[in-house]
Length: 167
Image (cartoon, rainbow, N blue to C red; front, side, top):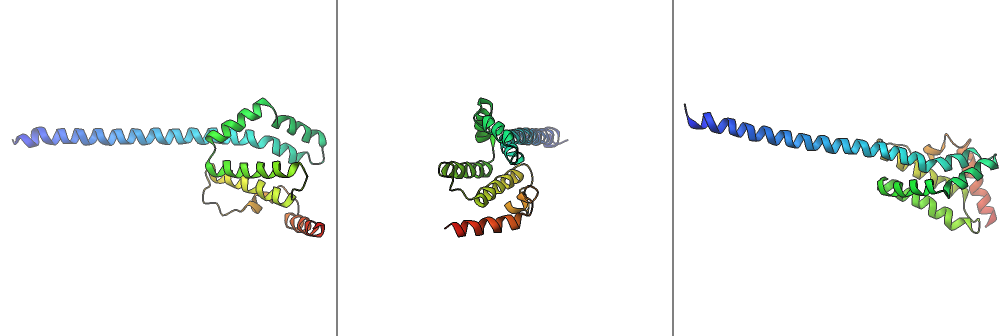
């Protein structure tokens, strides 16, 4: 018996086996962390969306809009928004910030274009969709709005025409 076959082969096999086990355990830990982050993202995304859904639901119910506005200025919502900024995917945070900045810029003089607001809302929803597991989606921000706005194409055309007549 050769000493290499008695000592070296089992030793190398043990080292290789340990290396494979170590790498696999690290990969599993990373995968589990990503899954937990996805679950946390879904929850915080829902928390951030809630007042906007209330606003869109309450377009014909002013009390719902008032509830949504109170919710947006609440401590709980501000806390959720901070958490959103920390764990949200970059493209989702950017889309939300773009929507909010547009709202802030146009709220004082009410110069906002409803079409632009809705497109930014659709962009925000689309970024969320991509973030929670559908990164190669073929949907557009317009597709994200179709279930929320009756006759979307007609509404956008009318809104654009009325904006052009106002100029």
